[in-house]
Length: 155
Image 1 (cartoon, rainbow, N blue to C red):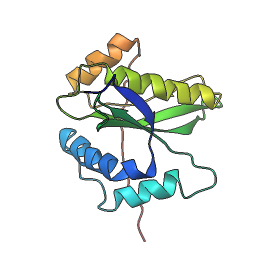
Image 2: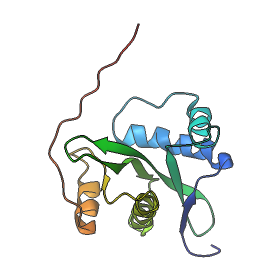
Image 3: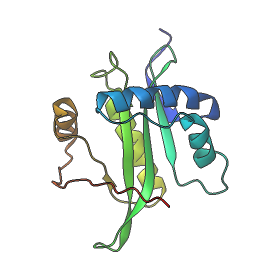
Image 4: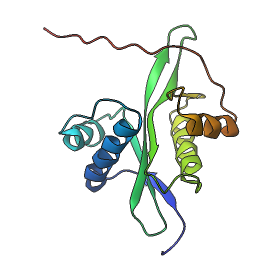
């Protein structure tokens, strides 16, 4: 081990590892796997556009290995007539939870919100994910009870 754990903005070279972590994240949440070309799609969203909306942060263990990630993007609240930052994903690989990296990732996401002039971050987690619920409650976050739906649009 060479130092303290850190969180930083993802670099293009990190994206294959972020895609691997996203596969683990989907498995953990009992969801369909990410698209096979996720790293390339993330590169397009993060680096191949003049005004990227998506932000990706990576957590490194003291040895410098990427062991987690968080993604976020600005969204709009119609009812409040303002933007907020949606944290779409936050995941730490097994064995790296409970070490403070999750809090570092959340701090980095809130810093992104401040940098964008936004005063709120929202996210969701499965109700069965008791560890995440406890973690978010300890941060002082409040839960909002809603169901999330998805409707495919094809053809």
